[in-house]
Image 1 (cartoon, rainbow, N blue to C red):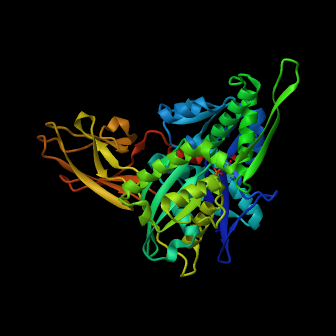
Image 2: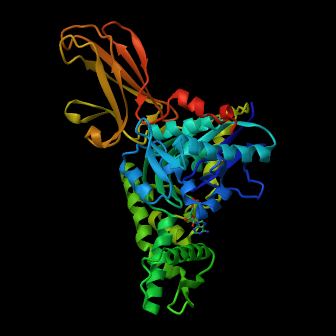
Length: 521
Ligand code: AMP
């Protein structure tokens, strides 16, 4: 057996860590980078480049570079989210054979687990180089709100990358583990995670080594990028006022202002005031460059992005509301994600929760460190390790479709996992020999508005008068948050394991076919 690592498979960046001699260590690549862009560039000849080199490729070959694959993983092609992502992506998104979203680069169509597998494989290779040994097991983190499809697709990605996925754990749980909350008495913790493109907040209850995600809420389209757009908009307005020019349709000018806005944001994390110089925003009628030169203070910046900061607290209100708690009942707040370095965020979080947030561990590395600790706990012979039992909750309700298109909930959202529930079905018609059951995840009362996990048919029932034949269907959600179904024919006493025919994920055979080791990738 090789080493067991922890991987934070992030939307914008990924990070890998391992526990060596009882201490977690983040592993760097040859250049000393401790995080890698989750970006994959595909060459015309079939070559694959991942990480920093792939991100550089994005500038001159955006159509053949896939970024933010995590936003698409486990999603159906015909969903609103996919349409929204397509509007902002240079690469094409196409429909897979089972209605799943896939990406098209040149004449290659890739399933999302294949793209994520390329990122995981890259992280595995970095770890193997840094450790000088084979790595074949990993704990991989996912957002707490990930549904069954997204978790299954992430597990498939690990298999394709040649990694045995020891456990899928929730990102906030992982952050809490990194901060060493596994040896603590009962307390409530909020994990505030503001990254480049997404915002997640979770309320955790930790009690004697048991971690329970009590509630989660998030905004999948709110992150550092939006802060940069807002500050760029401010700079654009300033430029237009100063020069009487309209540059709203000038893409290159907007790009320059956006990168100036991001640099200013990062600088304002360490200084109170920053000078912004963009020498040639546009060329004037005489061909001479027209530039922008201005200063921005921390308090100017706070005013410009205040609406975005407040938006994160609406999501916090939602998470606290679901947990039936107030901000003052929270014992500790942990900060995760690159944006949590910004004082404007830290100050606002301190104000909202009325306590100093924890920022001691690098916010880009904290999730991978927690995953490494969990990987160590699951594989170590040390009797002290392994004591930390993680209890997560189901992020979304699990239900079945009933007459009239309604969704009957069997396992409510935020139930601790593993968990199970069962329901007895009666035949509805005389001599009916099969029952079709459709399984959904989501909070809407109408099944059609929820995510369809799949359907199965229970056949070979005894032909009898309606209502005479009864079948108990048991639903189980395991520690990875994955759903399975068992049926018991109460009439004959036989039981059967049922596989939900997932409507969008890969089959076992497809995963095996895609494995890089089989393909010699
Ligand atoms: P993540 O997705 O967690 O890697 O976060 C990336 C976001 O964090 C981007 O919007 C970055 O601009 C932002 N970021 C990184 N470093 C800093 C910093 N020192 N101050 C403010 N924002 C930062």
